Image (cartoon, rainbow, N blue to C red; front, side):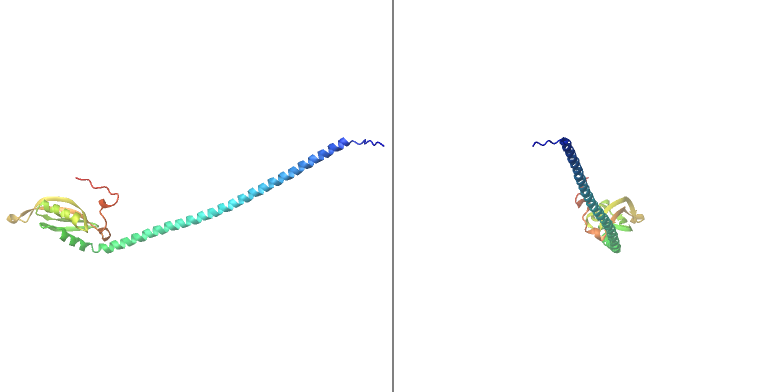
Length: 205
């Protein structure tokens, strides 16, 4: 016996394919939304972790800035203490400067030179006196510049002929005035400026 299906089977299959397509679209949308959500959560987590790291770095930077400021303050305090200590040492050393000055002037004054006055102003001393000749004055300058451990950089201010005494007993002498520096104890053993590294040699006259 032959059976004939008179139902619209083609329409049914078309409806089934359409429903399957719609279900596939819905499933794809759900999967896509899930992927987007997962990626968004991952990115949000990564951003949160990076922000935490940035906050830690900022906190560390602030702590280092505080330490740097403290170090700078300590350096200033150390320099101030060194300056005070140096000032105290210089004050103690300056007490003996008149002794060093008189002793060196006696040692370095050659024969034929008579010192009549000297005046100290800080680390410079003005010396005045008489000499038998200009050669004696030159010898005094050489002694003060090279032979004395306490005196340095003599500078001749004035030299002129003068008469010492009156009448027939008057003697013709050379009157001079010079300025010489006196070293502090901390500078006494220091090398001269032209002997320091990097110093330019003095020009030859």
